[in-house]
Length: 56
Image (cartoon, rainbow, N blue to C red; front, side, top):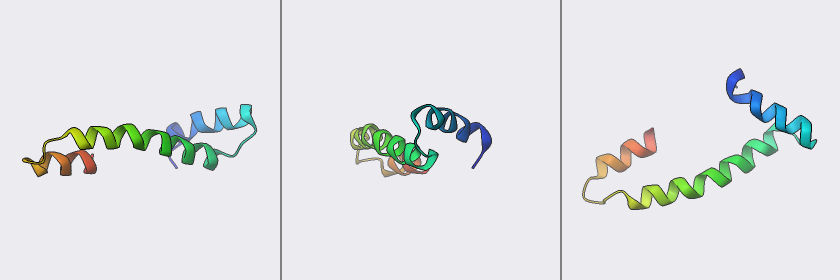
C-alpha cells in the first residue's frame, strides 16, 4: 500500500483500536453507494462516459 494512502487509516485504527484492513473495508463500502448513485445518473446514450467513470 502506498504510504500516503495508508497513513490516515493507520492513525484512525490506532485511536479506535481496530485494524487498518477493517477500516479500509468499511470506508470502501460507504464510498461505493454514493459512487453507484453517480454512475446511475450518467446517461445510457453515451456508454463511453460510464466506462470512463468506472475506469477512473
